[in-house]
Image 1 (cartoon, rainbow, N blue to C red):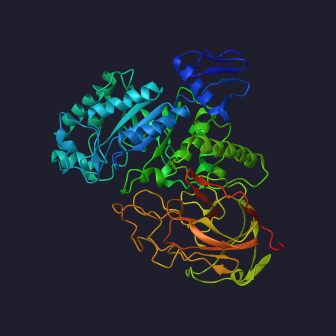
Image 2 (cartoon, rainbow, N blue to C red):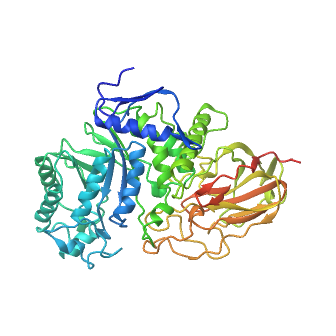
Image 3 (cartoon, rainbow, N blue to C red):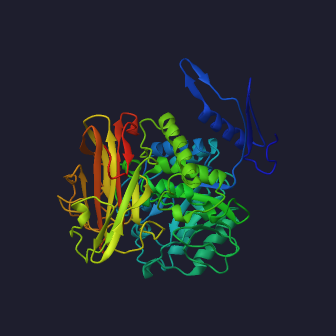
Length: 588
């Protein structure tokens, strides 16, 4: 069994009476060692390896993860912790978004005012020294990871303009300063160590942020003169004279014809729910093709926790970063033979081959969680055994508090206003999107109405059980992106409700009730189910009936619910394996 001669990241691992790793380069050897670590198991006082023959290689050249430290600073130690995980899962790029409106986070010795408290609106005084930058580069290089630094210009430059007392980016002083800053950046490492420079160019929405295309092109020429590749966001500024930039795609945007591209579409962790989001990362095909080629370089998983934070650890607590790294690592290393946009917002029906593939991979993820993420923020537990019936949407005619016969009696079907409604079965998962906020295929195409969800949960005893319960997951992006936050006494402004054995469950006592949507500077505390104290539910021995009411109106961005029992342990979140779900109406 030979190693792929055309791939310097390929390796062969053979374990029998001895262990042998064969590769074309030190990268392949390194990845073989990572696999060796993953398959090692302790057995009492001994260690055990399986007898295997593995030939392995990535199908994409770029397999990356991006952090926005411009908006919210993270310490070198916290970044290194995450980079170590990236290395374990064979990522080879750390995309470092170093500048944004709240702060210019990389020290400049030419323009030290960029780090001034006057220029910085969050975590004042926190920035990376040039020594810090060099340390991260060295740390990554040891782990076969390339750093892609990004200075995002000419948008996202409030800190830049405040520091240099520039009102608008068209000021003649801007171009020479930017040329200086990018040259200073490139002088921190040689082209082999730092072969890519990202110049942003996205979301230039205001006149004061605009520059001429000549400025952008001159920056590109400077970067090329330093033997580096230029990366720009797409959607972003398009310079027609630019034949060589690499386009990093976000949202639904496509790359320019003939340009190489990196895929970051629909995988922003700050929008991902810990459950439905992981299904998306599993079923989404990176670059929308089975493997890379001369244009499709790969993908970068991105974390944009836009809102202000109370503590740097909140970035890991309030965003499913570690689960996302594990789920995406498989897709970006092995590729996906097919894209499944129909499963970007929901799990396939039970017992389909696609469902079974996800279930098998979920078991692997849980094994890795238990082995390698003890005590870390890993917000994922088994969800493929959680089944639901759904009915709706009933027309509430703009009144989300309107009741329907489902609340009075559970039966197979109902007739409301001359229309027959029946339950649909085979909905699986801890989080169900009724209508996805990005328009991905989900349960309904209706814009508003009221759904009900039903299941039974079997408990072997009487108990008080912790549950994760939530409605309308809150994106950690650009304010509270689900409309205003509810007042005390409500789960959400759309008035959802939940009953267990016909007893209504009260919502949490919110620490920050009734906040508006545009509250970017007020940190999240308890908005989402996975970083607040779980809801305690009284379960009786035997079967417990669970009914949820999930209305939607035009004022809310998301239409979804989460309901799953959880064990909170010193090692992290774990399944409650003795509880069983069943959607039959009549159970003894």
